[in-house]
Length: 149
Image (tube, rainbow, N blue to C red; front, side):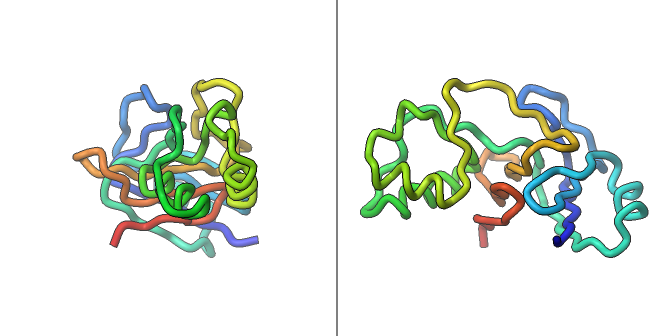
């Protein structure tokens, strides 16, 4: 199982939390193994791949409306990734084809929106946002699914 340290300019453990400089997240498989100061994480996981991002790393966004329009269900899901969304509300998955693509893509389906903090043992759903709010990278269940060029 590959282990990756995701480090960004700032880390926010909760959507409404204060950003902290110099922290990162260790992802092992589809789970968060650790959260803490990057130097400590690099010492504790010496063989891990390191991804450094410019922006604020935090929990993936929960998309709380209809999925963005696109020609195919797969493209609609990828449009979510470009927004930093790693979860959708079940109420907006009314098309069988769309639900199937969401499930295959490991997007979390929630009954209601709620806080999903970055914490050890939690699912590795992360987003890195630039200062202007645009998504730099999206990680769903430990897999990098979007990276802005």
